[in-house]
Structure formats: C-alpha cells, structure tokens
Length: 373
Ligand SMILES: *[C@@H]1O[C@H](CO)[C@@H](O)[C@H](O)[C@H]1NC(C)=O
Ligand SMILES: *[C@@H]1O[C@H](CO)[C@@H](O)[C@H](O)[C@H]1NC(C)=O
Ligand SMILES: *[C@@H]1O[C@H](CO)[C@@H](O)[C@H](O)[C@H]1NC(C)=O
Ligand SMILES: *[C@@H]1O[C@H](CO)[C@@H](O)[C@H](O)[C@H]1NC(C)=O
Image 1: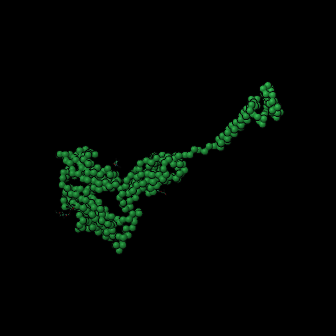
Image 2 (image 1 turned 60 degrees about the vertical axis):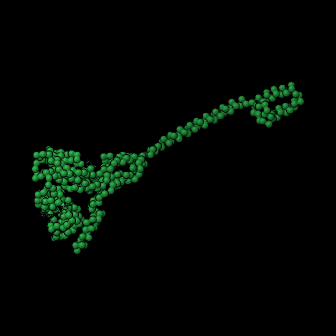
Image 3 (image 1 turned 45 degrees about the vertical axis):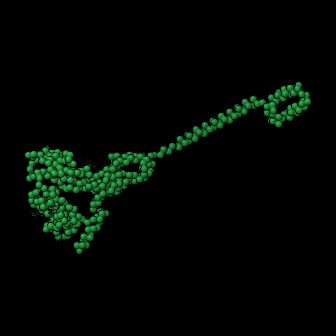
C-alpha cells in the first residue's frame, strides 16, 4: 500500500516528472551559528496519514531523532555537518550544511547556494550578541554596503552577479573582521532572445510570429516560465505560458522596437530580451481612377496633335520638293519626269547645244524628247 502511494506521487506535476522532496528550514534562519547557540531544523514534506515519522541524517548517518523538528540546544562543534531529512511520502531533502563557529564576528547567511531570484540575507553577528557598529559588508574583498548601527542586509532578487565570497567588519572595543563565506547563485535560465518568423523589413499584411526564446538550465518540479511581449512601452501580451506572439497581418503602425520578458511564475525572477526592430513596408498606394483617365486623355491629345503636325509638315515638305526637283543629266529616257515645264526647257537647251556640235545625233535627241513627252 505504501509502495503504491509512493508510486502515485511520481505522477507528472505540471509536465515535470518528480516526487515531492522534503525541505529543511532553520529557525533562526542561519546556516552558520556560534557555539552555545540554539537552532531548530524543521523537516517539511508529505506524511502518511496518521504517521508523522521523520527520518534525520547527519553526515549520511541516520540519527535517533524521528520527529519533524530537530533541535540543537547549545550547539557544539560536533553538531556541524550535513543534515538531510525525509518524511513518510517524500524523498530525501537537499542537504543543509550547518557550521558551528567560535569567533568574535560571524557573517551569517540564510544559505550558501541559491537559485537566482531567491533572496539572500546577510547578518554581521557578534559573539554573545555584543554591540558592534560601523558595520561594513564586503563581496570579494570590496565593501558594498555599510551601516552605522548594525543591521541585516537582504538582497531580494539574487542573480549571478551576487556570486562570491562575503565577509563583514564592525567596531566594538576594536575593529573586528569576520571570516569569509562563499555564496553561490545558480542561473535558472539565461536572458531570453526575441526572434521573428519573418526577417525585417517585411511587407504589410504578412503574418509574423514572435518567439521569446530561453531555456531552463535547472529543472525544478512544477517550475514553469511565463512570457510577456512588449512594443516600446506598450504591452502586447501580458504574462502567458506561451512563448509566442502573433501579428496576423502586419500594418505600418506595427513598425517599431519589440522586446519580451521571461519570468518564473512567482515573478521573483524576471529577464528581459534585447530589443528587436521590425519594419513594415507598405507598397505604393494605388493611383485613383481619375488620374488614369486624365493621363490617357493627355497622351491621346498629344498623339493627335503630333499626327496633325506630322501630316502638315509632310505636305509642306512635298510641296517644296516639287519646286526644287531637277532631272539629272544621265537619267536616260526611261526615268519618270514630274515637271514638264523644267524638262522642256532643259531639253531644248541640250538640243541646241547638240545641234551645234554634232548633226548626226540630232535624230536621237528628237526621239528622246518625244518619248519624254
Ligand atoms: C556532540 O558532543 C556532545 C558531547 O560533547 C554529545 O552529547 C552530543 O551527542 C554530540 N552530538 C553529536 C551530533 O554527535
Ligand atoms: C560531519 O562532517 C564534517 C565534515 O564534512 C565534520 O566537520 C563534522 O564534524 C562531521 N560531523 C559529525 C557529527 O560527524
Ligand atoms: C543583478 O541584480 C542587481 C541588483 O541587485 C542589478 O543591478 C544587476 O543589474 C543584476 N545583474 C544582472 C546580470 O541581471
Ligand atoms: C495565453 O495565450 C493564448 C494564446 O495566445 C491565449 O489563448 C490565452 O488566453 C492566453 N492566456 C492568458 C492568461 O492571457
């Protein structure tokens, strides 16, 4: 029966396969404490009804404790170690590394390993809660925050830039400096990249699908990303699990700068894509009918005027040609002659000349004259 119930818990949740993991929380929330301090670990996970039995492990070895809360009263160095727990219907929790220290100043952290977007709280804690002031917090040796009166420091949305070694310093009787503690922030997904199904510039009326692309690096059960699409400062599509947005028919007004956002469902982690410029080209607007009518009318009139001009010029040219026409001398008797007047004069002159030169040719010229008539 137990086995069957455990199997049922492996049913996919939100598309992800995975059973419920037990989770350890600390009260107070610090994974680094001074000796003699008290800390309680709480195991949270599903139980078999009527049985709240919980198994605790320290450094991989099962402990005597079988209740959900594991109390360490007046911590000793031998309480340091890796704690894990498991409830009836859960799988083993992620480990919690508890450190018990002996020092003047201790930089306390809520966890040493985070997923980006989770909060990180730092506390510069003095031995026996003695008063310290003029407190500085350092990341990788560089002071990034100071308080005149000692105060906790919370980074609400951690990102990979918060990786590093932290320490603090504060003034009491002397200036004290804590040891360093390494904090790791794991990236959950990289910043998205917005892409379009059609390359810009695109034509008016085109269908455009915008995709907000990123990938979860760390898979967590039930973890899902949501996406939002923007153009300049306008929201096109609010948070939605769909990583795509469609412009069914692009218009000129759709030209502009687009960007998208990918976020975890709780909204704690939100990443923005670089901008993508889309340009929508509009074909030349069709010319109105009156323009065509006018155009062809003008062309028609121009053609008519041209034709009339051409005919007039041709006639004029022909008329001028008539008056200039001459019969070449070697044109023989078969050539057609158009001007009787000129021909007569010419031939008569030629005849006279010939008669003076050679009498015998007289008959030939007379014949030519006759034929030309
Ligand atoms: C730590 O040591 C004390 C005695 O010094 C002992 O009573 C206690 O059980 C030890 N705790 C663990 C977790 O071994
Ligand atoms: C658990 O292991 C750590 C080293 O990983 C060691 O310092 C600590 O003393 C161990 N704790 C116990 C109770 O064995
Ligand atoms: C990380 O967060 C800080 C604010 O806490 C912000 O100024 C910085 O731009 C962020 N870095 C990245 C890479 O998101
Ligand atoms: C998410 O997008 C789909 C398709 O674009 C739409 O049908 C649905 O209504 C949207 N959901 C929300 C909560 O806006």
